[in-house]
Amino acid sequence: MIKKEAYLYLSALLRAREPKMLSREKAERLLDAPSFAECAKQLADSGYEDMSQMNAGEIEAALSRRRAAVFRELAGMLPDEKLIDVFRVRYDYHNAKVVLKAEAVGSEPLPLMSASGRIPAETLLNAYREERAVDLPGKLAEALKAGKELLARTANPQLADFLLDKAYFAELQELCAALKSDFLTRYVSVLADSTNLRSAVRTLRMGKNADFLREALVPGGSVSAERILASASGDALASLFSGVLSDAAALGAAAAEGGPLTAFELACDNAVAKTLGEAKLVSYGEAPVIAYLAAVESEITAVRMILTGRLAGIDPQTIRERLRDLYA
Image (cartoon, rainbow, N blue to C red; front, side, top):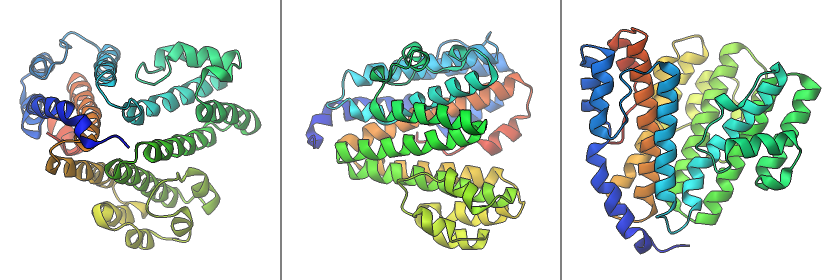
């Protein structure tokens, strides 16, 4: 375990950056801007490149560059680079899904792959095509191979996605064990719980059976798969997920019966944000760094939603209703 004092300088640096991050107040100003171009130009105050003349694809590329730049910068400053891998690993598994789906439909995956993973997109793609598992981390290589075999047997990309999701959360658990951070463990646990709650609600909503749900559930949460599978209704699920996810679980009970999903999805996201908010009470250590990295992800998601929504002419109030809580 790395001592918290090793994060003293970095914690102070990131605290100084927080005022420039996207807050709810700043998001409201973006939504109130008279045009998409004005909305995009305001983001320069938070360090974004000028996206006022970009289309949706170019905006996505610009946001990807922003994320990758943050990851690269902090990776060189962290006492243990595994901390940044907690956030990079998501994009490795995203890229694995893209590769499998592209092969299934005969398309080129590279344009849809992210540059934010641990493994460069081209390296992952070539390792897959040339069956060079040695070029990939062991768990990712195993999951990619198993996903390819599953897709060949079933022709069902969703099952391959489920398999990769399980491997992703299993790898997150390994990183938690290696880093020995209580805060990180709580964060990953809430991520897994919210993922499983969403899967359970969607399964009930679609009228799927327990076998389908079993494939969708991921490891690492505070509520075991067995307990979730034993819950046959939305009401039962609401009693399983307490604490920070209690509001989301209550909304999920209604959504499982065909009610609106938007408020439920938002409550799941906000439960994760609330957990991250605990880091504001910590002066230094790995917790402020984890919270900052997660906040960057949330900010990019919010910026994407606002910009692409304004670009498409969506009513600002509709966008406003879908925005999750922001860390800043």
